[in-house]
Image (cartoon, rainbow, N blue to C red; front, side):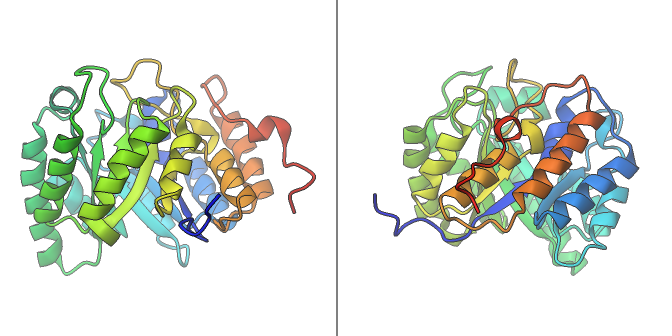
Length: 308
């Protein structure tokens, strides 16, 4: 097998505090969220999505994002990102000096209307306003345009790959510093990932930032592998695989951070994570979220004896 294309290092962006917590009923205290951020950082996770500036009445689970972001900014070298739904959210991210803000766009027209009450092209217009606000603020916050439902949609069904690429280009043209692709509902398979990511990389080059895979049908790690073969080296994942999508019934959540870290390190791809510390944190978080669905395999079996 040709290993020349594989990155020697990869980054796991922890999204459990946002994508994970927003999809479950339990509301975690600000204190526990801060403990989670601190311990993830101590375990070697250097990119964490700490929350979302969505109105608290819509997502009470994430109402304390400003406080969690302020805490994250005290940890040297931690790259803290937040999800923003619109310009107002972007203004709050800029106020909090987030390192990166992610504007989600759904390539599925029907999902976009259900989820954001906007068409995908309305979101592109919002990106222009957000870019102008960032530039005039003088802040260094990066802007990522995240194209979701990139492999299909539970509402609309088929999503045309050309439409995904058109929207990705439109986000770049509107001022996104980075773009990423998300399999929001777990429809992707390794071949479809290879095909779409190859085109996305040609289009976006080094502005292509991240792959976001859900393990709804058990293929998240296989899809990461397909991306690694193209040289993609940053992936979203959620501790204990928590999360899902409110419009994707049965979605079992994101790739599990600890399983992904194990796979990468077993393959010799360095992600800078202490797996024992991450597994200890997983144990704490699953206790805090007792009664909620959690996923993953490594916590059951532990590390193999052959792994240093």
